[in-house]
Length: 214
Image 1 (cartoon, rainbow, N blue to C red):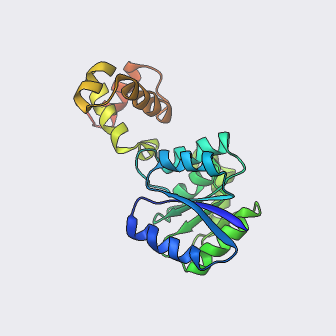
Image 2 (cartoon, rainbow, N blue to C red):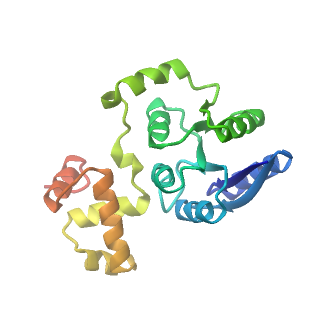
């Protein structure tokens, strides 16, 4: 029996996936999450064989979920569910630790096959994704990465703009109605994702991206 946790923020899609999995006697769904943080909590609680993960899930971006689980719960293998067929997205997900990448418009049989294969420790890509085309990305890492800005959550992008405008963590907390600790966490996460080391780097990045003006 392969155990699964499902992380998908769209209720209708989640219900459809649950119905699909319910028809498979060899697969048991242990829980479902509507955001990235809840997905990590469910994995920590249930230790499933497989996590089905929407890449663009809120609160914690799918790539960050994959990286954290790869470090803390490596026995749970991740299959990304995504509408994005762009090769850089696929490669970044696989590099982060995912073993599978399934497009949401694939046949239900493809998803079931992906679960079985990934549960066995093998990689699975939707048939529409060309394995050979991806190999060059693995061989040339410098050419493969997606824009790090695309990995930021919506809240992190807001924090980036406000921080570049000079707001401190307490200022961010008051403006966004969050705790100073949460503001600090958002700032630290976006700095890490964008490989920024200082406030000066952050401001220069924001200007370069035309998030703020000089």
